Image (cartoon, rainbow over all chains, first blue to last red; front, side, top):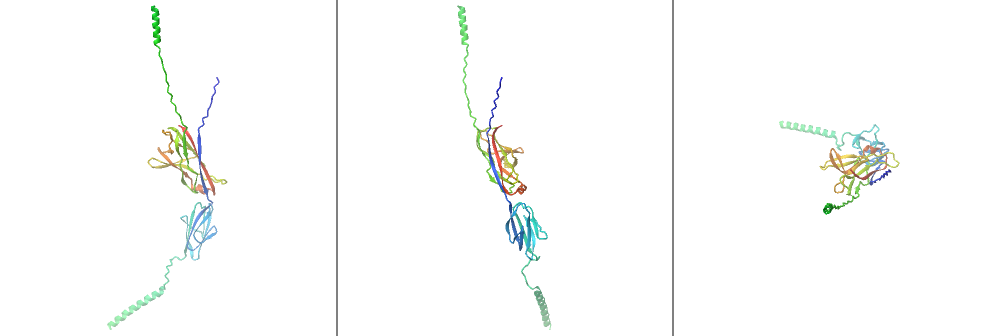
Length: 149
Length: 175
């Protein structure tokens, strides 16, 4: 007996839809440079004398050199909110910048006491104080003697 | 004569014992419609560089018909890392489902490539508009699909224009 087997492929409809996500990886980041005080800051050899936004390449070391004006010194260097220290040459290297960043440099005058703007002659006033005090004492003494006489 | 009468009576008795049966039929017909639906998926979009987590939308089913309890719509989700032409680096990421319970509490579960999300058929012939997942014996209704990537992976990627395709493959399945 011949048996014929017929196989029927019952196709099940399948539908596909797609969503495409795109992104752009930049080759540089913005670095917000803030200079407080008097002096220059060099970023990769380019000198800046005032606060500005600059573009720095991603994933590369950034050389920072500080040039405080004569009579000024570097008080602090703050990178992305954290204090960092420069070497003896006033240089610091920022490694692997991977996001938008900020660099704040504070340059302060070398004098440790605050300048108040008072230029009075202390010796003169002290002398006047001593002299006027002595004169007052003498007057009192002379008056007393006249009264007694 | 008696024999004739007896024979006639016997014949008459046999003839009166005939049983007549009548049959009538009722035919019921039905038409099983082809299941129809509209699958809504997240739109094409730009992911800002450095994004570690963001919603890309949701996958839902509307205008459905021809379903029933046990006759569901299964959607298989497949995806791969971001790639760019001529650039060796890739940016891997994962998707996760963000769901809410009826009480308002939320939970997330990973949606790995190849995973299936199911839209259950209902007695009224439609399917549930949103898919659900179970977590700790609770059922959460998915309200959004999250894109998740690590900052380290973003940082390793070379500069360029990257893209990735998420494929949603829908199939009507009877349990």
